[in-house]
Length: 148
Image 1 (cartoon, rainbow, N blue to C red):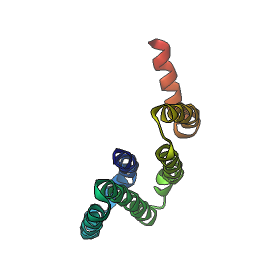
Image 2: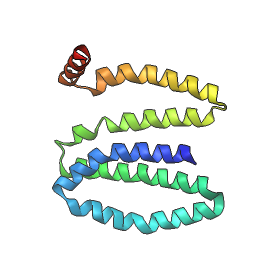
Image 3: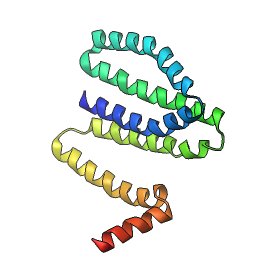
């Protein structure tokens, strides 16, 4: 259950960029999205809880985060094509996170999960350094560590 909640929290955190962009231009759309998704989510949550228990309900919650994120990205692309480039990196990040979580779910034992975590961080850190951070952000980080 906690793994599904972790997936949902990760996706919700990535959704914040798209949500902020939508709310800056059309705050009514996020409210309308919530209004439409609430009955669908509650029904799905109830079915999942009855059929699969708390773990299935957590999976439904994570799925809601993914669907909401996709809709928010579509809103951004329609409302502000210039801002669409700001949310474009979210898709590969979500796919990579999904693959990482799927592998982590499949692993058994704390040792295997710890090794996987180490490998994932070793791969993610250089990618984040080069692909996510801008040059001025890398310069500030270097200066901060040099002065410490």
